[in-house]
Image (cartoon, rainbow over the protein chains, first blue to last red):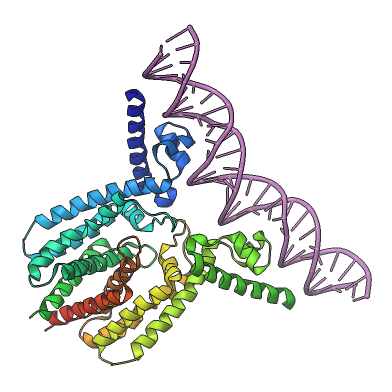
Length: 202
Length: 202
DNA sequence: CAGGAAACTTGAACATCGTTCAATCGAAAT
DNA sequence: ATTTCGATTGAACGATGTTCAAGTTTCCTG
């Protein structure tokens, strides 16, 4: 009994890691079940013993990506000058750097679309909401009088704005922005957003 | 000679319009050549007489979407209080509204990915760069001393930030934000960004 | 207007996907 | 050793984008 389950568990781990590598190397569209099966040494159909869907596989890879992203943002949050303003700048830059260094895996987080009827599992939803908390803390220091709800909204707005700059900045379709320039733009605009928000409370 | 070309031209127009409707109704992933052929009354393979690729078809639909978006931003730019600050806010809100009202077509602009080796045609690139000019004008009024290049960079940053808020705000995966709330958040953050940028020049 | 050339149109065929499932295999239990 | 039952296989299915030889229409010329 244990023998079979062990094998299954190992295969499952291999599958997810191989899928991660494959997305990183060839993009989300380059993920093929037959390639996966060959890579982990099993039959094409066997993939569906380890995972119900390709959708689930992508979500599992996404979970790992979000975990690493979370770590990157955590170190950015706690490393360096503790001023909330500069902490938020560091977090934004860290987001940009992570996206640049993990371009295809990061893209897969947003490119992936499931059939409208399928609902995505809880473990996947929770993963995503965790990200805002890195922004929430410094924001709470900057705006002690704001309600939790307000802070949450502002945190998401800030995150979204930085996300947009990174997303369009790393897009190769338009004129590709050199990474150092993008980092500078992001730092500038984050400082401007914070200053503008702070000024309103005075 | 004319007869054949007329028919071709009409079919081509039909094709693009049908593709547009199909994307609007069922999303980019719902665009199928066989459905298109049936809808415009020709054989499956005939689609490739009108268009070299599905890629080209999506780009042509995208061009129409960008044109309509441009119009929406134009009226927002010239309608209402002429203060540059409020003009920029109106443009941002107009972008948000357009995305909400043309959700799938707007998404198709960014979801679509071509094979890495294929280069996208000039007419498609030009379409996209036009958008920034709506932001450029008010920005130039706010920052008369900045260089053209600087203004262009700031314009793209502002656009990208708003784009991010709209993109993540309209995403249904996470908690869906009610549209009025999203509009308010965008207006707030745009004002904050502008105020923050202006404060730096004083 | 006839008739051949050129261009257009067709739809069957191909390659590639994700996914399914009846048949086969192998390990644990008796 | 035999049975049993779930795990595994890989062939097959249904879509899908794309191609192309064959058939059809259109156009030009004598």
